[in-house]
Length: 467
Image (cartoon, rainbow, N blue to C red):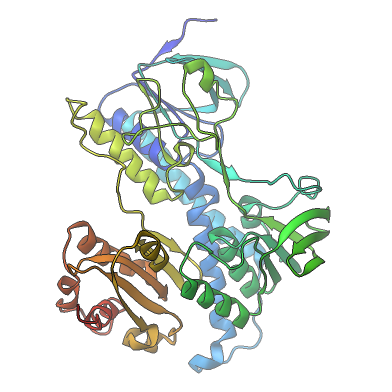
């Protein structure tokens, strides 16, 4: 083995946490090697969050054309050009790619394209995409390798060559009938978008209802939304066998409590979960332990079982959101700056985990759900209003959905859920109150610009029942 190249830090994976730690340490004058086998910047700006929302917005524009008469606009000769939808997405990705390259150049962190694997706790070999290999060593190594779509061991599934979210984003022709395995965030966002573009869509969900971990009223609202948009939903369904090839013809053999059936379509999208990218990395050679699910074992400071090695983001088992990966970066960054390791500056324990699903309307949530509160025996008062009560929603003709919150005996906000237009934009005000232990009255008593969607928070918290 050649003499390893010496660095101050090695970052394996340039996802949200990885790129930010590379930029941070590089800007501090440290010699940093950032190893990436795929696209710079990780999944979010290339094949996940941002491209998906780009396509979802194109589908929203298509829905406006479909609803044109409702707004007094008549335009009959319109159609969806999937090649142009894809081109718009790619144009955004190209712009983000340039931004990322600029940030790496500015920070001084070096990008190495290839697959990184441990030789020992301080040494990483990079099998270069262009051929050959480099051996690097550093006292600090950060792992941010993300996750990938899970392909369940169902007979015929691999042979069917199903789409994942990556291939679904790249479609430049519209599927005639898209079958989607999975009724979670990814599956539901794609289901609505593709239906609005003109595909027939069937969602197959193994649980009794969509988003089964959400409260029943949320699932019910989603079921109604998809029914109204003519999207077929098959629940309590286990796929036992797959026949055919996605893109031509595919058959799903389904087992339900009522019996067995076959669903046929032209394309199959698999969106049933995520698998951490931790295989074949030589983690055992470094002494880094993993969990039974394959995630890298970390503590609340995101330190692995080996001193000097950290793991962040999906591969570390953090909630699979880009904003959580960014907070992982902040946790590691701030604790690196803390001279006394016995008094950590930041911890992942008890942190807020807000979420937003970008269907139309959006579903946003933070804190406890009603279901969780009941399971924990937590006392709460429920307040809930329809989006129809939010006057801005009326001006937009977007009145589907509701706002609701759980209020504790001490008037603190325990949880908040919004299913409505612009729901994700309502989260920060509620989060700020929650993280600072402010009573709900702090939001209720605000003077909020009229007419805005945020005004709905005043209406919501003005309706809290007495203690």
